[in-house]
Image (cartoon, rainbow, N blue to C red; front, side, top):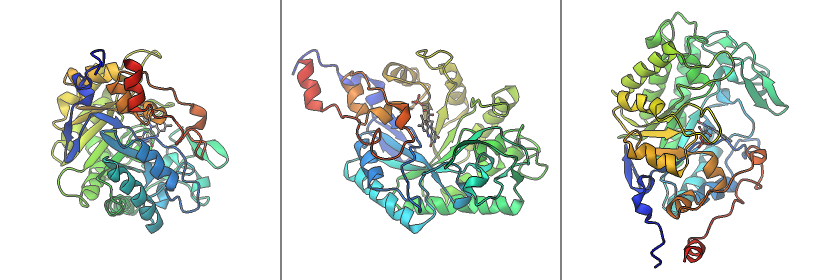
Length: 378
Ligand SMILES: Cc1cc2nc3c(=O)[nH]c(=O)nc-3n(C[C@H](O)[C@H](O)[C@H](O)COP(=O)(O)O)c2cc1C
């Protein structure tokens, strides 16, 4: 064997780690990426999904694309659900392939709330914490459309939504997933409730930061009922910035601090944190922004947003994160772990095919054969 070969295990990203009850052979996590490939009436994952996730089975952990917990949650085209039996069967095909190839896979649970559009809801208004337009855009069959002013959800709506999350979590378990991740990121339902600019409620689900975080905590408790041990992760984006409604300031960051400390009392498998956006393209991620949550959260932390091999190794080496998730790199590099091990440059994906449907730009990114790589390096 050539002495010029890098020693893969010198890299923190390639060391094993336990995140809750998930035992990872490496710390290279596949981040959730919506790909719009469930182009069928039932929003059922297809054989293409099984091929796509199977190609990425060497990830330390796969987190699936955001997946609808119910019909009311829908707010994007061709995204699969987990609320019908055919969907459970479709996902079973995916989890079987990933497990047969030695991988681990959790399902991300998604609800768009006020960021949906009447086009997705049979003409009805979407529900949100209050009747305040989130000022975002929704991807519909007719392309991107401006969000509307939603109707304020009643307490009965909220109870039904928590029940939808609980049922979806139980379905995910029957579909063979190793666990689930609660998607509480972006401009969607849970962050809408956390956001004082959108949540003007005066009942138990608003009023102050304790009220605003109640929905997420109730959803966590409901979702965790389907699992024993620590198999539910939470994804947060405290720095999420969009339009005039979503931006981080001292008040919102203090809310997230308190929320994260509250999560310490629950059996959270991991906190999946999307850090600040990089100021300049090619710049390195702001590690201090992630370290803030390392100090508040007692459990395992997955860092995300703008990482590459070097910065991923650095954030683990500094003790700030236990693992790093990669979204765009995993789209274009099914064999990202191998590429990191061999110090090979990752390929660059084509954004035009991110949501385009079909196999192009989905399951046709080349794998760099391990043997070919070894030979090249001799
Ligand atoms: C095409 C695309 C789809 C995405 N879909 C989701 C999603 O379904 N759920 C989610 O939490 N984040 C989603 N994200 C955000 C990514 O998980 C991640 O936070 C972001 O791409 C930054 O990570 P990266 O620098 O490794 O690409 C998506 C990102 C992209 C590019």
